[in-house]
Length: 448
Image 1 (spheres, rainbow, N blue to C red):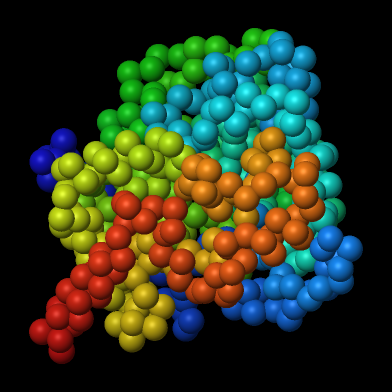
Image 2 (spheres, rainbow, N blue to C red; image 1 turned 90 degrees about the vertical axis):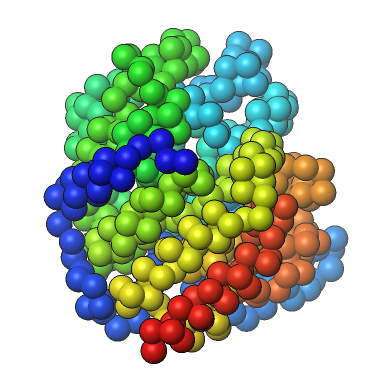
């Protein structure tokens, strides 16, 4: 049962149509247009590169190059405080927000002796670059746009010509107060100014959290429902976490990013919206969100079970309880893909070739077969979606990246183009792919 009326949903969709002008019309997309976030969904020419030479246990070997890595940064100040026991990152998670679906596995940050400074992270990435690393994604902990070392990190990745995609809820990019609080020491006094400074780096891609058009739904998903004040930072600790009027801040961030050129088709899809997770009751709006983004050159990554880490288990159990036969999940996917077909964004032939994506409507995930996830303590994992022992492959403090990569199950997947979602096997069974494609095929046959 929906938590809002159909009339409310329609009203919000109309409001967002006015928020930003469309770039494309239905069935008038450029030839070859795909919804594929730049440098996240890796291109075939990256995935299918020749073998590279590496030294592993003293032996020279030719190995498959690594394509991408998910990584974590904190400010050096917080890392040093945590090492000295002045800040407990397990009890006081280093973020101003308090999203109930936060992906992070907090006990990793209690491994204080092994926490990496951002320069140490870069040193390990330099090792990975020697075996082909093409791009990275920042996942946490917390918000990179709350990190006082932000521009040093962006400069370091720029010098390495290393594209960086940044997951963010965008509050600082849409709030003058928060932008000035975090970066006033650099002369930044407004959110628009902050976005303009970030936009100077062409290698930056923004993955903006965007779960819903509906304000009440969205605010609940970031823990800011009925909040009347913004977070504060005292002695490296986030105090009174959460932000007030979050959805309006997010929308202002989106406007600022578009005005700064992040959705410019001439520069690729540098801005994506991350609807992860979406709830089963959002069937009423999710397809409209998807088309809204596509017409503005903004992929919408829709992931109904993608709360990563331990919290994903609870979400999957909840979804299984309310949707034991995955009917709502299938209905949501069929709705999105049906709109994609009608819109001219894909074809049934292409869906049969590519397979149904766990990021419904956009290019399939290929990051697991082409990369690794490095935590703040150097721990290497399958991807952000799994934290159990079977998905942990070692630590960069103990073994070089090349050895961890070539010995990982990820490496043995070869250049698999559609990973579906190995981290969510229990939440996204393969039968969903078959059922979605079957229903789409039946619908297309009836209308042919």
